[in-house]
Image (cartoon, rainbow, N blue to C red; front, side, top):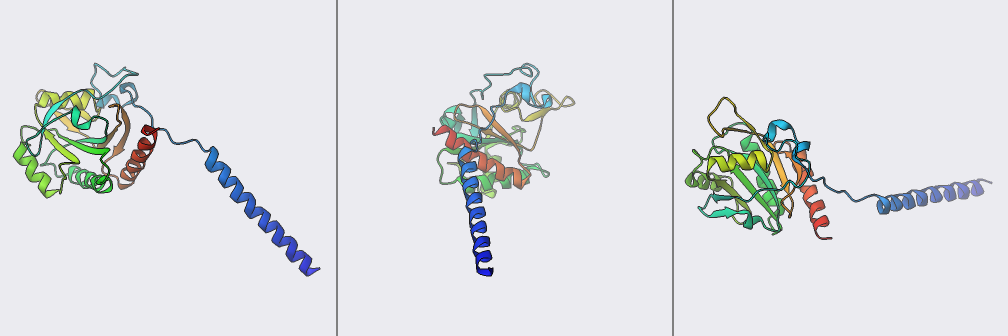
Length: 224
């Protein structure tokens, strides 16, 4: 009787285990693949969006640009053609969130260093201070790999326009002069079609992990 009971319990246990395995397998098969949203200006905090496009609900892409990187090279949209990239805004003399953001951008550089499809782009919001020479010193200090990551400076109006009408990533400073900007902690994920696919807190390690995972999602989507 005891042997029969043991066999019965073993049978029930085996069937339950098989049921869990089968259900897990079905869930994995049927679970919809993660798809990243395509962000439009109307979906973003209005403080970060220029008033001319705050109500735009479709067709938003990153505008063409021409800036100069830490090595004095001209950087245009062509450098990022058919690439996935992460963009942010910073300044080299910032002592608050910028060092944390730069360290996290370095982590992204490290994690994607062997992947030619993924690049990085950091724009200074104080181009009057961040000359090519200043960016070069900063890049050397922060171990920036120029083949992967551009720190760019240039015309302040162009950077302001990019920040407010393309990347939707900085606030305007009404108390300052023309084109003054207050940068945020946002990292912005851009796809191969120049569309915004995500915003991430560049000071939060978990958000950066999510960003790295979303890059994988984007690569899988783009390759289909």
